[in-house]
Image (cartoon, rainbow, N blue to C red; front, side, top):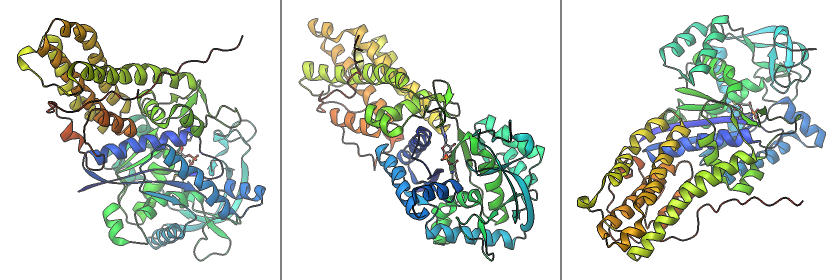
Length: 516
Ligand code: ME8
């Protein structure tokens, strides 16, 4: 079986999950599920980044031991995965012993390659980014350009990695496509960073008191980014299980946000190169979720809580929203109005209505037993819908392979829209009155076939909804064994299958009238 190893970034454990974390996990899950449904053995990891200064500071503020604080916070992120139905195969906390072993081993390999040296560092450090800035990059009165908080001037002796030794080789691997960065804009951004020249970075900090000890030193800890990036090989079994590592590594896809490409597209691949390990096949950098055009931040107070949103609209609806309405790679809106609109228009009206109307008519006109197709009674409108249904897989899969979820879903909703239109155009109730039974059966058969194909295509995005639809359609599909490419062939043998209308899939959200 072909394998596919996909990872998300690991989230800082100092605060609760925010909508951006949910977004990244959901789109990665859609890919993981799609890959499974197309015949891959999928490994899928996420986790928490726990050795940051903010984590230690927050634990201290609460009077807690930092590790106990991390374990407590990690539960929120694990629960988020359950709430959003994220099909991970591993959840890593960077304070786990397996990770410490892996960091120590990788550091040893880089040191052995002669790529670690001792030096003095003086620079401006943002403790929220956990990154150094040059004076020119700071804004105003020595403020971090990302967080708008004051950067600290840090002078310390620590250890450096010779990034500059590998930047030419990395540039060639990006240019040749051997190491893929998507979307194109991010690839160009990384190439221009490399062309401007990239300075060596320190891999340790001194006197922080929190983090993995740098082997052979007294007060040095591994720099939190150097530590965090290594999580991807820890998960694959580095330093724990060679056979597993041989099978899982390299990762096929690192899904991350656009703010951390420097770490994933320059520093991480060079760490691997130095240690003689293969590079991940691809890094995909998604955009940011915005609230009414503004970046969500705690200081502006416009952060949307992903747990509240899932409880309000259902995780399936939010998953749909992320996939359909946030264009892959771009920033996208995330607010109540936008979600309600997508819910009522696409899910309640287009999809939900199509399923309930169609199944209702099969119950009413055919006693709930699906009818067969009569080729001799197909008119042009029916043939047009049949043509769209036959072409769905090609359009849908081409978009999914590019992680263009909104494109893939547009092809599905184009089909369901056409099916709804066929109902209006053919008016099955009139066909029945006129005794045109073959035509009536054709319409109903085509509707069922449309719903079947659409539900298969929707299954990586809305797995719970897909199963509900399969139950209504009397289809025995099992997610674990399903191969969507095989099943999405047009022309299912419908005759006699028991169909039932059941409950509405997505009851419309009705606005509560405001008190005057
Ligand atoms: O960067 N919209 O952790 P993090 C979409 N620990 N995605 C967003 C977002 C938003 N508004 N805000 C953040 C870290 N993200 C490091 C990663 S990986 C070895 C270490 C994304 O909790 C962000 O881009 O700040 C990143 O991919 C992920 O959420 C975790 O962010």
